[in-house]
Image (cartoon, rainbow, N blue to C red):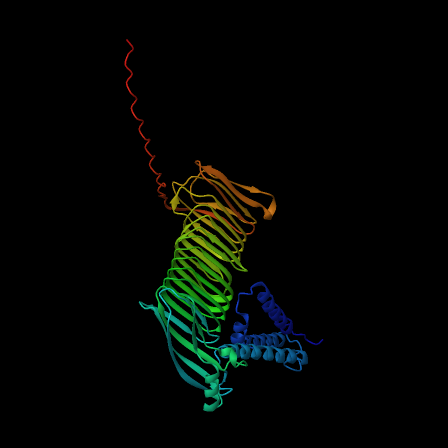
Amino acid sequence: MKQRSFVGPLVLIALGALFLVNNLRPDLPLMELLGRYWPFLLIGWGVLRLVEVLVWSATQKPLPDRGLSGGEWAVVVLVVIFGTSAVFTTRVRDRWNDGRITVRGLEMFGESYDFPMTSGSPCGKAPKIVIDNSRGNVRVTTADTEECKLNGTKTVKAFGQTEADKYNTDTPLEMVRQGDQLIVRTNHDRIGGWPRVKADLELVVPKGASVEARNRYGDYDISDLNGNVEINSENTGVRVQNIAGWFRVDTRKSDVIRAIGVKGAVDIKGGRAQDLELENIEGTVTIGGNYSGDVQFRNISKPIRMETSQTTLRVEKAPGQIRMALGNLTGNNLVGPIQITAKNKDVQITDFTQPADINIDRGDIELKPVKLPLTKMDIHTKSGNIELSMPAGAKYTMRASAKHGETENETGAQLQSENEGRGKNHDSVLTGSVGPGPQINLTTERGNITLKKGGVGVETPATPTAPATPKTPQAPQAIKTEQQ
């Protein structure tokens, strides 16, 4: 009987799993990962095939006539085509966005020619700067001045100096003042076609200025403005610092968005991005999009509202920090109400106040409240363990239910444990009250629940009440004389 290999079906299963992951986790950079690691698929295939042959030989089963069948060779060809296409697509896309396409270090479609740019215009103390630069990086700084100054470099892709000079002439730099607005325009769209021109700009503007920028590709670095910042882009990295107004970003793709020291609201709308960092934000924070790298919040004074395809995060304040990556979310020194909803994440929260509502599809949850009195908690995971450390002196009413799992109480508190149901699929339930306190509900549908003994609880200082306003004294009544 002819031996049949199981390697081919395994390869098909692996490919199907990759496409399934892409559908379930659109925030993952799947194309970049495939472009980098696809040769391991062929290596694994070869190793499995060799193991098969050795096993057949050891068991004295007939060996195959050929190492791979015709169908398996067809799958190999498809894997190679798919992998090399992923590599080529990723590399060409990255270089195309920069206006350069290189193959093995050689530039295609001409050479690069640089042209310096210098300009300036009076703009007042608090102008609105509108930047229209389709490709290129922009850096904005401030000075005690009422004039806007620009220095930069225009890079032109051409097959000769004559053609480069023509493209340079056809895309003049303009600084046009319209009322309180100053429009900076590089006019790249005048030549059309593939990206032949990009411009890297450095602007010096008055401290009271606001900036509105739009582009297709390029990074922004803006600092020390008393006005607002708004950026619209297809692909950009953004870094802002010391902004007295609000900050808004709307982009389809970004490698990093960083804002430090913003007094107004922060509103970020993104398609796919990597890293996000917000620090010392005094206004509300609203975030959309998907992030495949690190997301960090530090010292946020007002509510955070974050909605992605995988995670919903709502926190009233974050005097400490929050850090979120693909597989975990950690937080320290948070003020609630706290709401976290996620599909696949391990959650660790330390030192939080006000109600906490956490709902995870798959992942472990670890909570370490520090301050007393405790707050209401509704904690649920479909698949994962829950661990809650109770500070000394805490008062609460507990219901912990571990379906298809176990509950363990290490606090020494007078809680009752019982099993509900029969057989191996029983539910372990831990209930009871430790003094008058908030309701704490812990539920895992497949996992264990552990109550641990924490440190000494820190009493939250009561909010001081305003002293009562003293009543205005009444005027003394006149003394009545007795009638004679």
